[in-house]
Image (cartoon, rainbow, N blue to C red; front, side, top):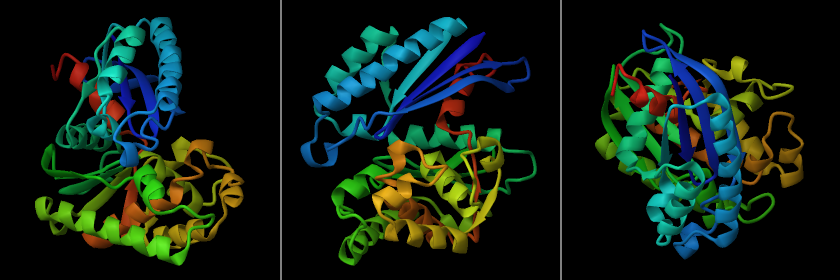
Length: 309
């Protein structure tokens, strides 16, 4: 059977079409991402804007065609931080149902963390991850912290993400010292809150997910272009993350846009995301982040397979 997972977050909507073999091994057919900024302005207004909905629905129209082309037999659509916050989310739900023929699930931060943990840990090379592992999934509106061995054991979702931090504080180009200081205040308070539920000190390694982490890693490695095969499973030291974060916060928008590995949709928000990653590394006491290209999408597909369902 061919499965599809759709993840609609604050910044991006993504699609994974994959098969699962008899041993539960995932075989990717196609993985796509569109930066739609669904959560644009939601921290201020509490609602999805018409423009953000239109961008998202246009991307979903394309995804529906891809799913039909691959003969998807079962699909699951999850929506995360922005959709949890929006007062008018029923407009979003109706639009998804019309285009995809399925109802989106507005999942809790706890379930988001669990799916991300499963997708990341099962997707990394054997022997690379030491348990207990702390998985940090940095999104546009929220960041999930989850600690576990074979399965999640402790988790917490907090409202810090690359889009939310940028819209709240990082307004200038480049941001001012005062704006950066205010951002650190929000991030460090939220990470401390997560640490009340997730025992960071028990972790033997930290795995980082999502576009912020892979982009920071690409910059640390000075890649000539974005290369998922190089990035998946690479290890980037905390000092390297700190150096990249400082560089990103000093750069102008034009300078960030000129980086050969930078997705256009991340140009405005990568500085805030890098700060979240660095704060997570420092709070956990880990000397490095293991980068994973597999994530919540893979975790969703595993829930659809016969060996789990």
